[in-house]
Image (cartoon, rainbow, N blue to C red; front, side, top):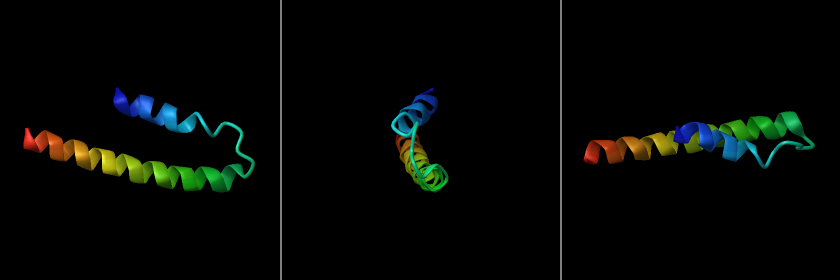
Length: 49
């Protein structure tokens, strides 16, 4: 559930980006990195409990 809200929140500030394609690619790369970090943290917390 958090993941879906997470994507929506991150997508919200970029509806009318001027350099859409390049910005979108960079943004997706950034988002993938954040998602990986988030999942790693979640896994660590889950394993710790």
